[in-house]
Structure formats: structure tokens, C-alpha cells
Length: 405
Ligand code: PLP
Image (tube, protein in one colour):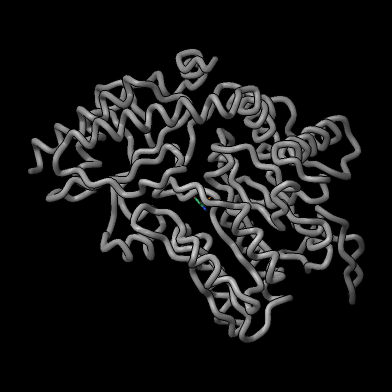
């Protein structure tokens, strides 16, 4: 059974007061808090295991290398990739997408080719493709989103055509919570011979992902959204595709041999990892994955859904509340506005009451524009939240209403 109070005790950040109130942290879609096991693992690494990895001739370097590569194995196992050669360490989702646009896109796309995204995408999955399209004279198209925040099934069929070379889409919207139909999009992309990229930044904490079963070509994620460290993430890619792609960045580590006139490149995955790597990122991520996978992801999802329903109900008892994103299948991310008040003012009042939410465009400006909005308040729930958090949040929104309307 899922025991939220036992879980909460593992997150030291939750023990503090903010503006005189116990912290209510509802900003987990931006970044999750870190449990003791992750903090301690990273601290321990810095205290006793600091050394650069690979090619070291001493104990600490060898140990560091083993721990670093254990991080790769933990990520491989997390979504059942066939081999650690298919796991490239990155700075996070954003870098993974830039790597793909640059290395795959610039090599394999030609004038007139089409790149398909969805209207739900985070800026990280829009801007690299727009830049690529400008360079290569390609076209970027979008699968439409309806009022509830779901992708239009008919739009998937219309937008993905034989001209489509890449379909890059989020498995879970960071603003509306919508969990997209990955199987359907992959099947359609395959039917026209396009490659698929799954942005799993949010999905990774919601659903078990099996890249072999889903048959996606690439997947990107950020460790900091899965209880792990900042500045670290991974790109999964099928070996058959990664082997055909040129390096993204160059320098040390990614080479096999360097001469004054010519360089040959290292094997996968190192071909894509130039320079000294983020060792504690890999070490901390392994600890975060161990923490997360000890829990039953379905129990976690059910716990968060229960709290989302409690929050939705509480908010809807306030007449001026307007919710955005009511898809049937959605993560516990609740976006809303209080009609007649500015989202930033609500955020400030909530903060005064110790409730941490995010306000603004959430890096989804095109989607907000489509809905005629400039921003929302977003409360995103994670496994360490509880019913008291939600009660306090609803009370804080009611107070904001009294102060602002
Ligand atoms: N994609 C989605 C769906 C996200 O939610 C985010 C971050 O919020 C990103 C991409 C970018 O992730 P990062 O900033 O960790 O690279």
C-alpha cells in the first residue's frame, strides 16, 4: 500500500516553513523535490568518490567509472532499452531534443520534408525544430488539440503524411496534464516511414515506459523531474539509428583516435558524450531511479489522481475558477485561472501562505495563445503530497479570491 506520510519523511524540503507556513509544494512538474537517498548519494560521491571517470589508473577513478556506468544501466532498465549503447547521457530533455534536431535532422532531412509536433509541446520540443526547418527548408506541422486538451484523432491522421520524416511529441503535457496516445501516434508515423521521438520529461513519473514495446525510435528525459539531480538526463535511441548519426559535440572522450589532420570517433554511446561528464548526475540518477522503482508506479499514479480529483472539486466550488485541461487520461497537473484576477497575483498570495505553484506560460506560449490566454496558475502534484496540502491550497485560492475580486 502507498504510504504518503512515510514518503514525506524522506523529503527534507517538506520539513521547512515558508512565510511562516508548512511548505506545500505543488510545483513538481517544474522539478521534483529530492529524497534523502539522492542527496546523501551525491554528497557521498563528492566526499569520498570524487575522481574523473574512464581511463583512470587509480582506485577512485575505477570506482567512479563503475558507479557512473551503473547510472546508465539504471536508465536502460527503467524503460527497457535493449542495450546501454543506446543510452546517451545529456544535460536533460532540452539537450536531447537539440542533439536530435542537430545530428539527425541536419543529416537526414531535406528541403520540403515535414516535421510533425503537437500543439501541446513545451518550447523545448518546438524551437529546435523551427531552427532546423529554417536551415533545411523543411516544414513544421502540428497535431491539433481540442478544448479538453486531447489531441484530435482526425488531426493525427491528417497531419502525418508521406512527407513526414520526424514525429516528435510529448507523452504528457506539462501544462494540461494530457497523457497522449503514444501507440497511436507511433503506429501512424510508422505507416508513413517517419521516425518517432517521445518527450518523456513528464510521462516518466506517470507510467511505466517500455521503449521496445512502444517501438519509439528516440526518447528524451530529465533526471530532475524524477527525483534526481539538475543538469542531467538521457537520450535513448535505437542503435541502428544512433550509429548512422554524426557526433553532436566534439572534443575529449568522444574520440577513438586524433591526429593533426584527422579524427575517428568512439563507439556508442561515447560518440555523443564529449568532454568530462556529469558524473554525480549519473550517480544521483541511479539513486533516484532506485528510490522511484521501489514504489509501485500504479499506486503512485492512483494516489496523485485522488489528490487531483480533490483539488479539482475544491477549485470548482469557487464560482470564478476556470480549469484548463480536462482530458480523460491525464497526469495530476491542474491549470486554472480565477476570472477577474491575474495569475501572477494568485501565485503571490499562495506563496504568502506557503503554497508553491507555478504561474505564467509554462513554456507553452503557442498553446496558450490558441486558448486566448497569456498564462495560468499550475498546481502539479507528486507522490509526497497529501490531502492536507490540497485542503490548504483550496483555502489559499479562496483567500486570493477574497483579496483580488
Ligand atoms: N518537455 C516537457 C514536456 C517538459 O515538461 C519540460 C520541462 O518542463 C521539458 C521538455 C524541458 O525539460 P528540461 O528543462 O529539463 O530540459
